[in-house]
Image 1 (cartoon, helix red, strand yellow):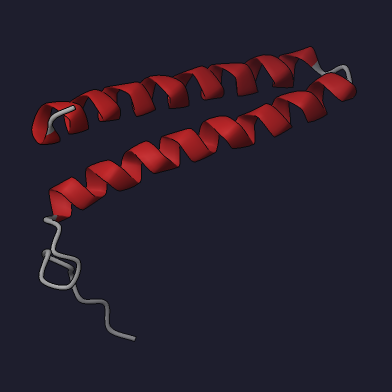
Image 2 (image 1 turned 90 degrees about the vertical axis):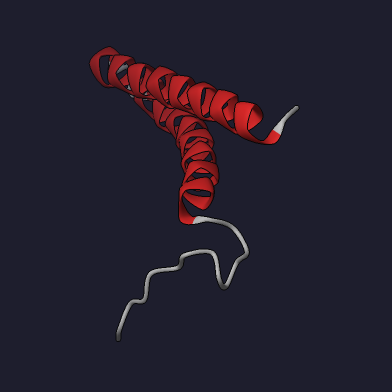
Length: 77
């Protein structure tokens, strides 16, 4: 299978803009996923793993916020 680069001709959105939207969605999705993982670790009383997942969740939230700020600056509020 050959992968061709999408340069906005198919979607009407430039790669960098699409990538930024994708990044924000991925960060938000990961933050939600980490909540489940945190609950699983807490249920098993594994505070070390829960702490790791909380950090990952915070990092994902931060990434999403930074991405949203860039989107807002580029496309308006």
